[in-house]
Amino acid sequence: MTMPDFQLDPRLVRRRAGRAASGYATVDTLAREISRRMAERLDYIRIEPKRILDLGCGPGADLATFAERYPGVARIAIDSAPAMLTQARGEKSLLKRLMRFGKPAEPDFICADATALPLARGSISLAWSNLMLQWLHDPLPALKEIHRTLEVGGLVMFSTFGPDTLKELRASLPPSQAEHLHRFIDMHDLGDALVGAGFSDPVMDMEILTVTYTKLDDLFHDLRTSGSTNAALSRPRGLVGKKHWEELRSNYETLRRDGRLPATVEVVYGHAWKAAPKVLDDGRAIVRFERKPG
Image (cartoon, rainbow, N blue to C red; front, side):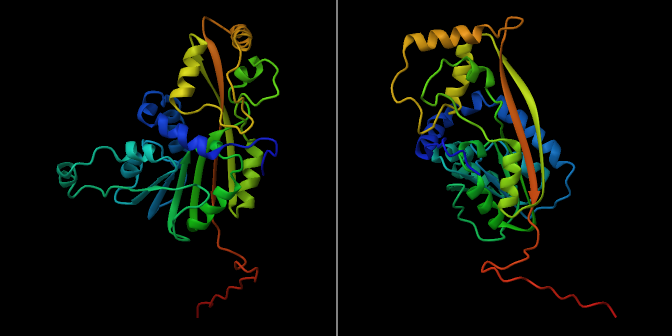
């Protein structure tokens, strides 16, 4: 499930995430709110994980939540940007490490790509991913890797952005042959990808949030500071002209209401389970025999 005419530059995604690492926490209000809403969904799911994976952990804001919700459970934090992992680790001097004696173990921090996780098959109970999948033009390989690393009965839960995200900015862009704005994958396609990756009982839902700004430059600031700028291979390679920016700003200004400019965010949530396999990796069917009591 890909968008054939839209491809992302993964090296540029990592580089921009790395540059954004130190300042990300100053503009992560939306990510924190979405994480809170994901956690509310987790309240209704019965699971007692033995090991938790935070995939695309960024600066690690969700790790403390897992420690509180599941005391003593091992946590693994993976991100493709080393600078994000540095932020997630925080400052760990010898004194601070000694002061943690008797407290929950620190997470394991691993720098890795979501499509090639350095984890054993069936080693994870809960895979959590808040706002990472939108940085993959095809999420299926990553979902397959998550499925591989989950134990039978394990759960994947994620959030990502849907196609209506930044629809005002997209509509305000002057006509161009270049890809000026990131594209996002439809909720139903993500559900199909979960099934294609081998998951069972996928549950998908979506909600629309609206963030407002006093001026357009504030929106651009949030996008740049969070590393959320266009990383399409078909993005413009040079500076766009003054006329382009003036037309964009003029178009966007027509959307102002009550002194504020809106920015729509379509948030897609999904979760699914890893069921017992019906076939082996080589395609042979698995036949299970159960002894009847008595």
